[in-house]
Length: 606
Image 1: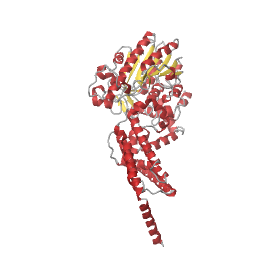
Image 2: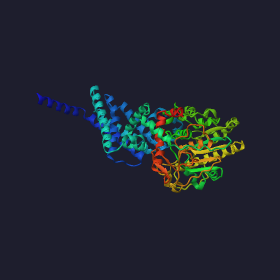
Image 3: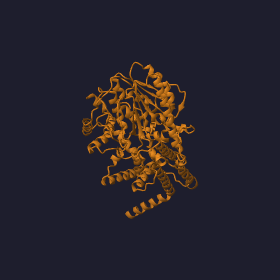
Image 4: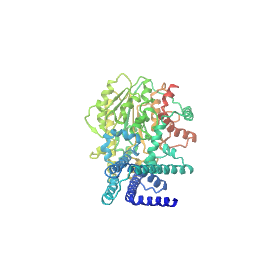
C-alpha cells in the first residue's frame, strides 16, 4: 500500500509536469525577460555591469516578486498580464528618466505626486534615448514568442493550484531575501544601516533590487509614528549642548533681505569661456561689497529644489529616505521668516510657477512666510522652462517691494528658467564654445548666461527704485546643474579639485552685508551653513533656533561639509575626530527632528 502511494505521488508529479510543461517553460521565459530588463535597468543606473553574486541573486528574487500577479489569471499573459509587463517597462523607463534628471530613483511616496511633473514633462522627455526602449523591445519579443509558440499550448490552471503557486513563490522569495541579508549580517555588514543612509539610494536599488528598497521605505514610514527613544533624545540633547553659539553682530539699520534662489546654478559655469557666461556675477564677485564663496556643497536629497528651500529657510538637512515637503509638511518648523518676525520683518516668496508645485503653497505657510506670490498673481508675459521667465519675475517684483516700503522685508525669489537649458537650444550666446562640448552642456551654459543678464537687470531696477543700497542680497543655487563629473570630460579646468562624480559645488554671493569673509581654495561650506550665516548677519539674537550648521561669520567658520552620503568634503586638517563626527551627526539629528516632529518640543523648552 505504501509503495503504491509513493508510486502514485511520483506519477502525479510527472503528470503535472507533463500537463503544464508549456506553462512552466513560458513562466521561465517571463522570468528571464524580467531578469534581463532589471539587470539592464541597474546597468543604466550604475553605467557599468555588476557581476556580484549578491546583485544576481537579488535581481532574481526581485523578478520572483514581480511574477506573483502571474498566478492571478486562469490563462495568464494575454491580455491582462501583458498590460502588467508593459507597466513594469514604464516603471523602469520612468525611473531611468528620473535618474537622468534628478540623479536618484523615484521615492515610493512620490508616485502619488505625479501631477507635479506636468510642467517638467518636456524636460523629462528630452532625456529619453533610443536605448531606454530596450525594455519594451524585450517585452515585444516575449509577446511574439507567446503568439508563435505558446498561445494554443498554455493550459488553464485551477484557482487552487494558482493559490498554492502564489503562496509558494511568495514564501520562497521572502526566504531567499531574508537568508541573503542574514548571511551579510553574519559577515559583519549592517544592511539596514546601508539602506538608511550610508549608500547612494541608486546603488542600493542596483544591489538589492527595487522591491527591497520599497519594503524598507514602507517600514521606515511606519517607524516614523513611533516616539523618540530615550537614547535618541539623549543624542539630540548632546548635539545641541556642544553647538557653538552665534555672536549675532549686526548693524544698527534694518536692511531688507532678498534671497535669489537660482535654479540649477553650478559654480563651474561661472568660469566657462573665461567668465563669458556670467560677466555680471563675475564682476559682482570681485567687488568690495560682495562676499563670494565658490565652494558650497549642495545637500539636497530626494526633494532637490524643495530641499534647497528647506536648507536655507530652516537650517535643517533633508531626511534620508523621503521628500520632506510631501511626507512631513504639516508640522512645526523653525525658519528664517519666523526669526526675522522678531525684528518686525514682512516675509514673502515670489515664484513664477503654480502655487502647488513642490507643495509650495503649504510649505510657504509652514515656513512662516506672510505671503506667497505665484504664477496666478503675476502677468504671464514670457514663459521659459518651468514658468514665467526670470527677467519677467524680477521686473514684476519691484512694484511688490515698493508696496512694502516703510517696513523691512525678507523675500525669497525662486527662479525657474535655467532648470535644464532645453529652452535655450536655439538661443545665441556670447560664449565661444569649443567644438567638442556636447549640446546639453552648451544649452545649460546658455541658460545660466540668460540668468546672469536677468540678475543684472534686477540690480539695475533695484538701484533705479532706491532699493539696492538698503538691501542685503543673497544669490545662490537651489542645487547643482550640469554635473562636475560630466564637465571633467570636456573642460576639466573648470572643475575644482574637490569636485567628483558625486559632488558639484554651487556658489554663494552675499551683497551689501558690511561683513567680510574669504573662503580658501580647499575649504568648503555646506548649504546648511547658509541659514545660520543669515541669522548671524541679520542679528536674530532673540530667536531660539540657529540650525544644525555653522555661520561663516562665527569665530570658527566651516572649512568642510558633509554630503547626503555622509562623505566629508573639504579641509579637515584643523579639526579633531570628534568635531568631524559632530558635523556628520548633524544629518542624523536633522533626520530625527523632522521625522519625529521634535522641533516643537525644543522650542517649548527654550
